Amino acid sequence: MRDFFSLQRWLPGLASLLHYQRGWLLPDLRAGLSVAAVALPVAIAYAELAGVGAVVGLYSCILPMAVYALFGTSRQLIVGPDAATCAVIYAVVAPLAAGDPTKHWQLVMTMTAMTGFWCLIASRFRLGVLADFLSRPILMGLLNGVAITIMVGQLSKIFGFTYSEKFLIERLASTFDYLQQTHLPTLAMSLLTLLALLVCRWLKPNWPATMLALAVAALAVWGSQISPLGELGIQTIGAVPSGIPSLQIPDFPPGLLRELVLPALNLAMVSFVSMMLTARSFAAKNGYEIDADQEFRALGMANLASAASQGFAISGADSRTAVNDASGGKSQLVSLIAAGTIGLVTFTLTAPLQYIPTAALGVVLVMASFSLTDFRGLWALRSSDCAAFWLALITFISVLTMGVIPGITLAVLLGLFQFLRNVMRPTDQLLGTDQDGVVRTLGNDEQIKSVPGLMVYRFNSPLTYFNAPYFKRRVLALLTQDPSAPRCLVIDAVACFTHQDISVMIMVGELHRELKRRGIHMVMAGRHGQLSQWFRQAGVKVGEDGILLCPDIYQALRMTRCYRSQEQEEALTLAEGNPEQEEREVNLATTIA
Image 1 (cartoon, rainbow, N blue to C red):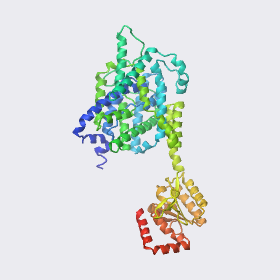
Image 2 (spheres, helix red, strand yellow):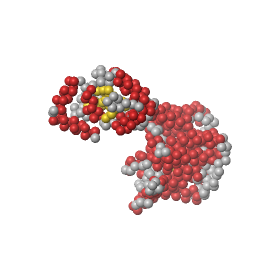
Image 3 (cartoon, rainbow, N blue to C red):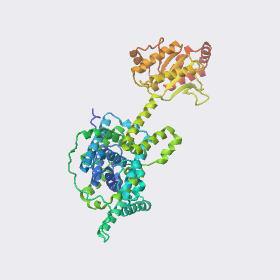
Image 4 (spheres, rainbow, N blue to C red):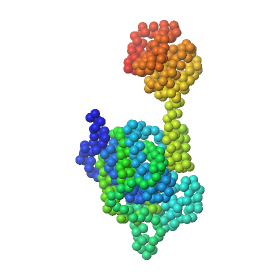
């Protein structure tokens, strides 16, 4: 009960801060300011991607960062707006809002709150294992597709035209026509921003290049407005309100909520998997572990905090986390310092932000999207894991052709199908012994021999109702193919009998009767106590007239000597008179123990 109400269970970040070391303060302060310098322009750009005002991106940084610092278990992870997350939000909300900016913002907040609730539900049921549900190849294909979608979508801002098509393929097909509508001052501003960004990264890699590039673009716009040239028609983000956001009560038909439920679930899934990849990478680098279930709760609380502060859904930010780690950040205090810095700008210094051109934000988003792409890694899968390569490629193509939301749904389904395929048709092994009597897999070494008169079988998946028939067919097929005509089957029960399933028990009873008809004895090695109880409850005979149960596979090999030929038994009896052989058997019995 004391552990249930402990601070470490509910607020691990705060518990860690209570043991803060004074020597961490200077590196944490430096890292916090560096993170804020990177997060500020990125948040404004991602707000544009999500279809909401620039200040909403700032709102999405402040409170979520502070909340994660209290609830999270990672000392380096920085949460905030994410390109893939914002692309998903816009793809869901834009059709529902039908061009109404107020409804669009309210739907974004509602979807963010739903995402937070899904994360909390997943944490309650300890579904942190979902961090491994979307395999790395599937996520690779998904992020590559999302990156291409974002980059193509931002071309309209960079070149100064407006898309009339909704989907990516149609936009690419009309690229030549759109390029003829290029607004030259807007294109010049985009090139200026790109040049400033690349020069800063080249000359001063440790400086906040994105912030400096946006500052150069904003100064250029401001200078053009006060110069004799006058307005050049370059679109900017406009006035950014300052201060605490006013409370908004969602005002849209309740039926729209149904349209957000499943997309919010998909968003929670993708955000969590992406966040865990980042968090685990930096945790391993810095030598500590993180709690996946607690991270689910922290992500849920951060998203609820973002919705409450009028923001949009957030996730783990790999680029800002990398800045934190490179700057020497030691604790969650970095998030609090960064949140405070962004809050100071949001509440007092928003006036200069009105001069930032949308073309510059488009350049920032395109450059940020490059960090999501990994085509070299995707292509490398072709030689290392062909099945993974096709999964990644199918996900990538589906995002490009069907859209972000259908692509994410397909990615989740592919992950599920991949798991089901591995469980329904797992690998299996026939086992033998080496010269020392140690049980090993047959076929890996010529010195490993099968045990005469026996077939030792291992099924590398938990047995359940949908793979039990395959298990039975596989065992009977192997027995039929074995030229030595084994008279005893030993099954490694540790690997496959992990839980009680009545369908599995019925299958085992049928398999036992079939083997008995063929004159083959059936032995289960491992899980002696559990299997004895499960078989008796299912009415499956155990013991001399039924299935023999042994504590482990070595004991099973010793017990099954009674089924060997008379010559083998006499040879074994002579061997038992040999002290070296007896010592070897004692060693075998203790090895498995």
